[in-house]
Figure 1: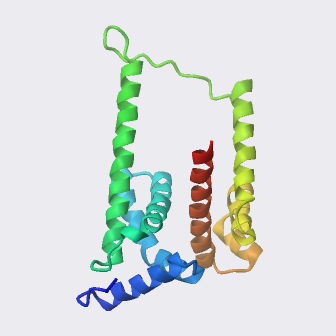
Figure 2 (figure 1 turned 90 degrees about the vertical axis):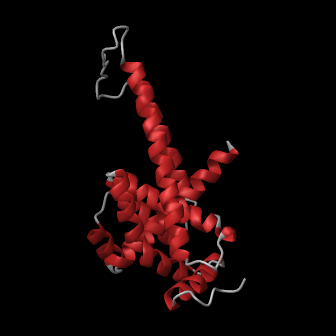
Figure 3 (figure 1 turned 90 degrees about the horizontal axis):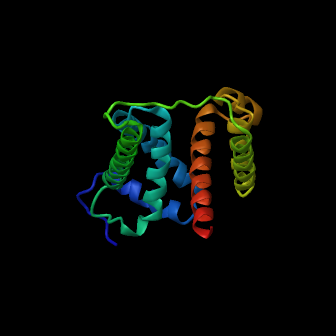
Length: 200
């Protein structure tokens, strides 16, 4: 496909990076990620007002963008396309969340239309403990499917609960590299998880 000559030099470079990333070039992927992850994250954060949801949705946005890369046309800037995917994904998330709240509202109303909350104890019962343990085993099995460098990052960050600074010191790499590679590791893990769900 021909690149639109009216695109900016930055947009043209983005397109070249995208082609390289699709071929498996990790450096190209990291560069695209570092260019747009913060902007995407803060756009989503404004929409959802929750840092954890915003981080997850940012990962999903990049995952969906690269999964649907064959639909991207170089007539338009990659950044425009990426922001549209991120925005649409966020809107879908908010719509689903709203539907869940509506269901909860209905479940909590009694015959007089008053809210009646039956709050459970925070302590896990034996069956919940078993489910939690099984989830941890499944997650560790999924993490094992990652390349060693990504596996180390996930294990240090989420299993050992290291800070970015501690990971940087442990692996002897800059904090910026830790964040970029951890972001990529989570995106890969998300894709592995999705593929496993499809097989079940």
